[in-house]
Image 1 (spheres, rainbow, N blue to C red):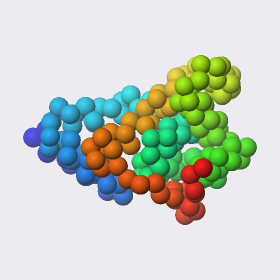
Image 2: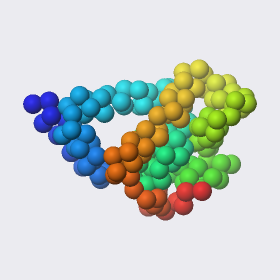
Image 3: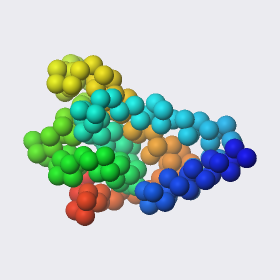
Image 4: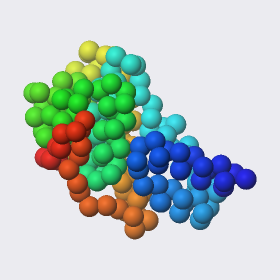
Length: 177
C-alpha cells in the first residue's frame, strides 16, 4: 500500500514538471523505507524562509543544483522558480553569471557559490542577505546551498545522471556559465 502511494506521488510530480522520475521509482521498488526517506528530504531542502527573500532562496538552490548537475535538475529548479513568480530575466542572468543583472536571484546564487567553494573567509553575500532580509532568510539560503546538490549527486550514484543541457528559462535558453 505505501509503495503504491509513493509511486503515485512520484508519477504526479513527474507529470506536473515534465520530469523523469525513473530514479524515484527505482528507489521505491528497492526499499519502501528509502522511498519514504526520499519523500521526506524536501522537509529539509525546501525550507524557503520568508516570502520577501524567495528569489534569494531560489538563487541559492539553483547555484547548488548546477554545481551538482546542469541537466534536468537545474531545469526543474528554474521551472519551480518561475512557477513561484521569480523573474525569468534574473534567473537567466544568474545562469549566465551576469550577476549585476540578476537581482536577488544573483545574490542567492553568489552566496551559495561562496559557501560551496570551501572558503572560510567571510561570506559578504551572507552579510547582505542578513542585513536586507534577516536571519531566517540566511538560514533558508544556507539550507538551499547545502541541499541543492543532493538530487543530481544521488541520481548519478544510481547511474541515472544526465549530461549538461541548456536551461529553458521561460522560452529563452541559458548557457550555464
